[in-house]
Image (tube, rainbow, N blue to C red; front, side):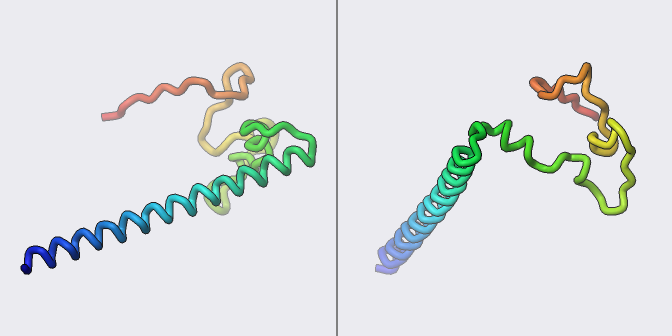
Length: 103
């Protein structure tokens, strides 16, 4: 009898957690759909294409991010984050990244 009550309690707890997780997933999906719909309507109203690249280009550059009080260089180096290399031959899009393990 005790095992049956314990099994029922565990099953009810598992079902409640599953329903809560499903509900949270639905909320996140609806929020994401709402934001994408807003960005789509904004792109249609302004006449701009609805592309991730176009939206990402409007974001602040990485040169403004960093620790407070960092000094930045003026000129072309000001567009680069501190400690980064300049783009090779002026290519704007990174299409391949190679990672090396340091041991």
